[in-house]
Length: 138
Image (cartoon, rainbow, N blue to C red; front, side, top):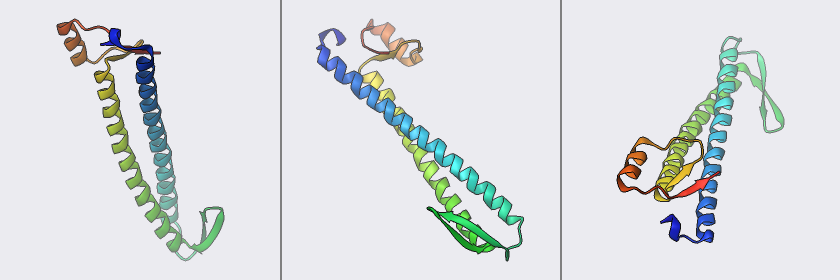
């Protein structure tokens, strides 16, 4: 298949692969950022739970400090923490789907990555059919 492809088709396949890699990396980065934010919210909540509920507390909303009691702020921090956990779970599912999409793309176009061992199933299929041509991404 690869020998009958024009150079433009090969470049298009490589560009599509790089786009999928970039999308996967963006999702992974977002997952890490949101996990970090969720951990910060968890730490703040655990600290607030040790404080007197009637004490003054402030929380940052955008660029504005909002004053309230520890009890009020704790409720909002807990809500935000729960929301962030949901966002992280959804992003992890997106990341899994993007990884599956990337694997399907690799299989469809017989893409091999330099210095990476091909999956065992693909290796066996390649050995049976004798097909060793494909697209190499550097």
